[in-house]
Length: 287
Picture (cartoon, rainbow, N blue to C red):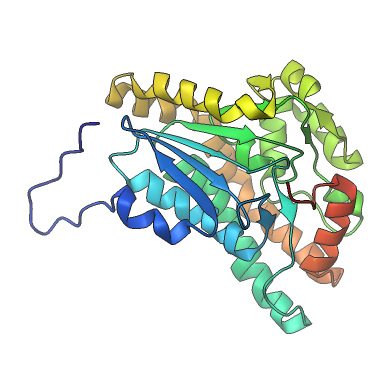
């Protein structure tokens, strides 16, 4: 891989290379990069299914920023580990009401907005999302340019079906963009479990296959993209993302704030919500 040229001006702050940020994410992501610049990031918890919590919620946005500024990285692959896309873990802060107010902004709203915006706005390179198992927070993969899905996985959004929160954190944008407004409305209002077969028929994902082949295929596609002329590849990526960029700018921060207000009004803690989501999604297991 040819190294990116750096500006010779001594006052120019250089980009942070992959080797300098790889290890700081080791407790959240397994990170690998090929010689051609294809980075694969698998979120995990202790090497197994990643449990959704504050560190990972923040870490995705932070990783997107580091990836996007890295001139030696050419394609970004992002997905889960094991047999589920995400499990839903315990939060790391006490959930008294005063702390709830603070954390719903600092860890939910701030980090959540930066996560979705980071995937679409910060990452300059083409992105490939990998849904390796049953997926809540499927927006992480659906907001990517290309999405692959395990043939036994299920996509669902349980926000509204739980009865005390609403889908305003970006999932509504991802579902509308990939399946159309009417189908997305139904999926969110009734917590529909969308199989891989239905997801590909609706155009939500690009390919479905056995779980064990997902990352091999993602890497194959990534290498094909990396082989294209760099300038054309990067500018094409930004052109293709324009509708998502516009929708995120128009809606995300308002609807995310409404979701946080709704949770505060209902005095719902994260642990309450996560317990309900785990029960409904059946993904709170490791493997």
